[in-house]
Picture (cartoon, rainbow, N blue to C red):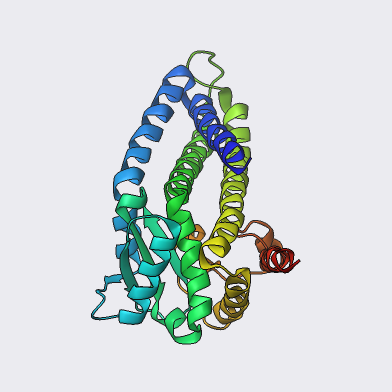
Length: 284
């Protein structure tokens, strides 16, 4: 069901991108939007892992340098039935982690120095099992493409906004959707793209929590870790790029109230509740 829902949402994002292109330039605008989507997805597929690792200054580590952490990841990779990913450390005191890579054969996991400091072995096992679940189900590629398309839609919406303001949207059926259509697209498209991306990301986070709990063998490992990480990220926020915030196990961006409604991460209380429910059902 999660896979079907994700496929539907990805298709919806692509349709929205094409409509945004059509609002600006009619059929030629749609063609341009499709070509843009193809190019951006190609870049996401091949280079998103290198880009995000460089963005946060992640450094590759060997087993000799980080024997406990490296060994833990290797143990979990065997339990998950996937190849050993590359292991990186991010020099940041904010405790967090993410996985990246286009498929299990070309994957990497990254953890901050802060998360290695505050979590015990069981909690760290829960976190890294969650990340390896993302790797196993190719969630990183899905999320990266979704973020790329959503960014393209926002870019086209800004173009539509300026075109409408400066009279570029004359009512011509073949060339565009008119000034009114452009203005509507400029307002509606970015919001719709953000909501769709959010739905994709939240769905995959819940699935990774469940998969990670199965790999680690105890849902309470991750539940305990999430509580610690949520509190610590409020105390020591990370200067994360909003475009890549969805990749982290907990939202690295601060902000509550209304902003939390538009977070790419599910509510922490609900994530913990589901994990605890899994643990109790096993005991029963």
